[in-house]
Amino acid sequence: MPVSNRPPLSPDDQRGMTAALDAARRAVVLDEVPVGAAIVVGGKVLVVTHNETVVRRDLTQHAEIIAIRTAMEALQTDRLEGATLCVTLEPCAQCAGAVVLARVGRVVFGAYDPKAGMAGSVGDLLHHPQLNHRPEVIGGVMEEECGSLLTDFFRAKR
Image 1 (cartoon, rainbow, N blue to C red):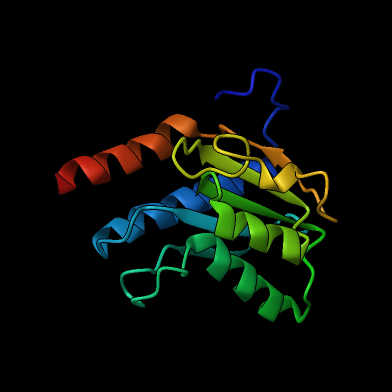
Image 2 (image 1 turned 60 degrees about the horizontal axis):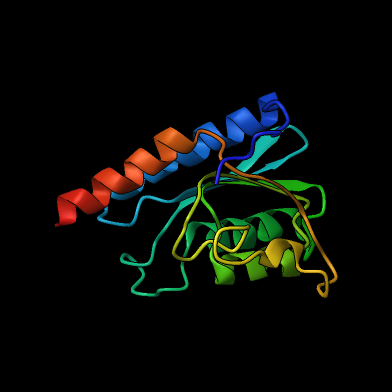
């Protein structure tokens, strides 16, 4: 589901996505599904995380959830309106819900998720007209690298 009219990637988005992709690569070593996330605020990468569902034995511990929680703690706030969430995989329903609740300003993601993606693939929770917050969303950023990491991980599992 490539976006043909995607705006050029800003240096902040590039730094955030590179950090998220590096985190996703680190997740492989822990046998975690390689999804990484970074929160960028004021031009700086504030938080970098990856999935921790296996390590924590908690299926809710997706990279985005950990990143949002950690950023709010670091900033001592319950809103991330000026933040950008960079993540290697299109957010699922849980993570898209957290983005809306935390009022994250922007979401930049890599690979589309045709089975669970809620930023346009399966549904579009991030732009649902009845919700009180709709972040800017840019998908397909570094899509090939992000998708290949996931494909290789699951291929090795079979």
